[in-house]
Length: 322
Image (cartoon, rainbow, N blue to C red; front, side, top):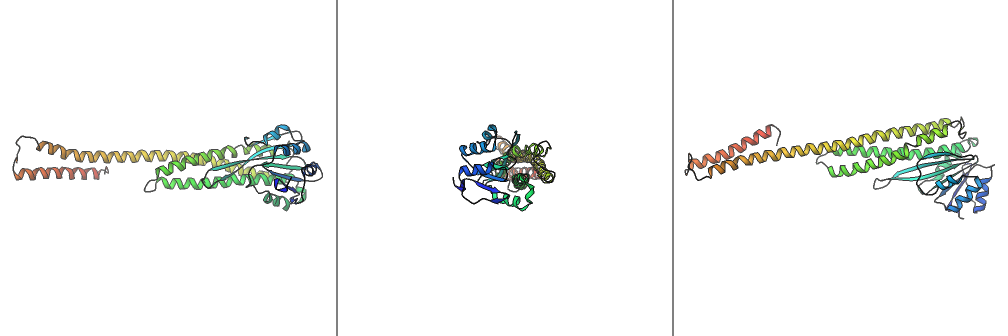
């Protein structure tokens, strides 16, 4: 097995020596060391061997496989199992979710994921920078803090998109099709973000419960800070979902108003055209009338045509119909 297939940290320091699968399992099983093993897209056999060495429950190992779990915290006799999601917006502004499975034992943490964008070195530096007696609970805090930060960044980007949509609603010329397309995509992204951010409240509350015994009093303020961020993101997303619905309703209202304006203009022009049509129809009859077959009658008909048309135009314009 090559070191490229996993990343092992001991007390925050990266282990660079070549390790076979047997050596890796033996090191993880050693209760005298604190190890963090990061497995990007590992094979099932390796997870099974690690599970046997650490006494991981078979259901937890099964849940660490395909990406189909919601954020959760499962408590087993010898370890904890967490499922959280890292989020990122791609170039097409689609929200991408990546599942991260975390096994927490008294002397080792194992993370399983398929997101190659997750850099374990950054988290390990934070773990290495604190006192050595902090233990694995601080490493767990650093992992969860990094995950929640991605939720926070995504929420900020979605809020910027929402503000742009609000500006486009009243832009001239109106970009209704672009607003409709981007509004639908925004609502979809907000729904996906809410699905992974909202359950994090239960995860954090479960971890901070004193019966779990994972978090010490010294680390409790750090987890409380992450919990506060989770609450802020959740409330933020809920507020944006309401605003996004408001954008959609405003868009429909503006479309209705524009349609009414168009109908008023069409009706006004139809009235202007209808009056000359009636006059010319009347004068076109084969019946004598005042001025019939004279130049004065022709001029009178022209004055009637132009006068009524201009009069209707000025009347409609004054009322704001044109």
